Image (cartoon, rainbow, N blue to C red; front, side, top):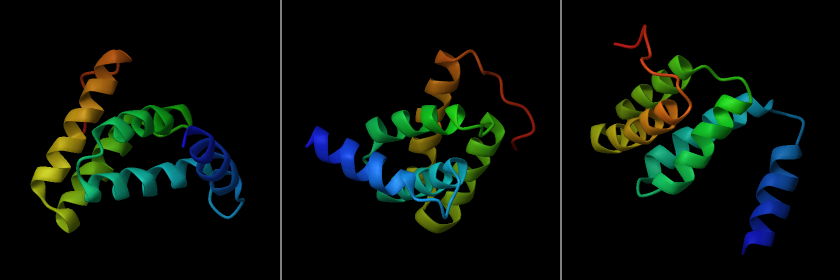
Length: 98
């Protein structure tokens, strides 16, 4: 399974030139948030989103925006995962997020 994830998802799919890495991470964060129960994957992808240049405020805004389409509980769960990652990386507090 690990080989398939690395070879197909992170290899083939992430290497496609039609979307830049930061956009792919925004899509991934939205989908994982909407699915729910993906906290481990969300932690990986919040870190990846930061690594490809998304700001914590952009990530927080994307997770807040997802509440409109997938509900508050899933958005809150995703935000708590992001907050954990931000804390581990010394990125708290985040400002300009209502």
